[in-house]
Length: 83
Image (cartoon, rainbow, N blue to C red; front, side, top):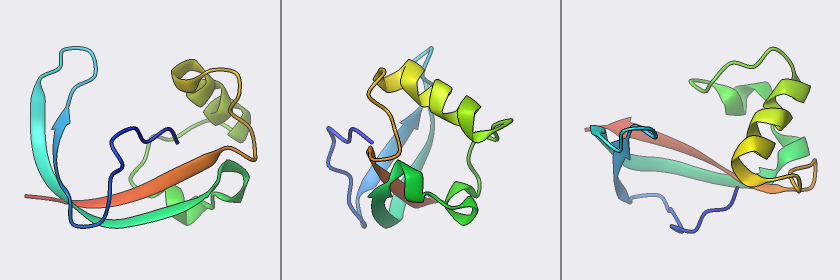
């Protein structure tokens, strides 16, 4: 969505817990795909948080990124391998 880090395939990343800032894993980015939020398919959500409905997913992302999240909002779908 709003990728201020410009994540790309092949990057090495450190995963941290949002609340505590504590590192819990390291990973290599295996794939990056960009599309509009409204084009996201079920397969894009594998190994991702489960939402009761599409409406709940939009609400959650609006909590993170503000009211401008809609079907036209660009998103990055990132797959990674833990190392």
